[in-house]
Length: 314
Image 1 (cartoon, helix red, strand yellow):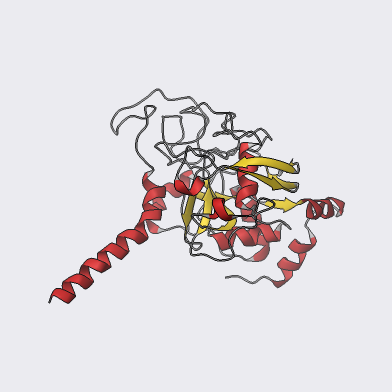
Image 2 (cartoon, one colour):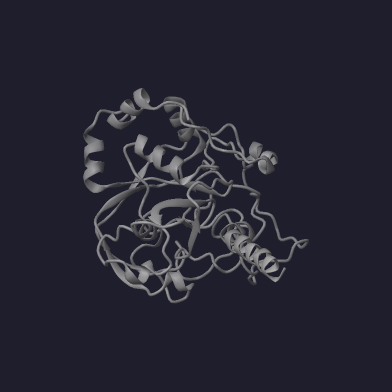
């Protein structure tokens, strides 16, 4: 009898631990002075509706991040953000914007790849998440990887993502070291957006290199497996990420983010097959690969052409 009770208690403990990563994304953290308890409101900033249908597609654009060192991590954050270290990265390019519905739909149409998943509990949100220039969501890590590959690109490494959003001076937010409650599309104040915004809507959420929406809008898959102590143990030049793991890394904040853990250095983790309305991605490319892409004629890349012929619906 005692053994059976122990098994039941142990099962509940395991289930509770497994739910922590999802709970962290969904609920955010403790309230800050900028936020008010549920039921209290703040002034609404007049902005364009979330699902504006008259928008022209935002042009695809990549930002070149120069080779050099930057400060990765901080002592102001959690254990997995420490210690701050100077990391050197070769030059690479990264998408200026999160991948949007418009461009991901082209990928699905051309390759037959599965459409973004939509859990039943989010049926009410779908009409507000389909704007031309809203970021694609409900995609797994594998979905994001396949899209980037079709584009002749890849997911950024965790270190590349942090440098692109943070710059080289160790700032905690894209705009600097002073917190701004309405600096990005978060759930901290009423800003006119209940869900994701069209990419680039928050001009303050712009890195020193000109990369947009790193702090808010949607969380973003990156290439790395998650390892809590990786910032301490990784090489100082072009860290490739852990060789294996259980979770993949998510970076940035989303339109549901609240609380204090909104630094650009904050690290999140999730099972790679998880799909949610708060998770999207952007692509990156190494310098040599970018030069090869620029030499090709305009239109589909060689990788795109081959995938259109070989990829079957999933």
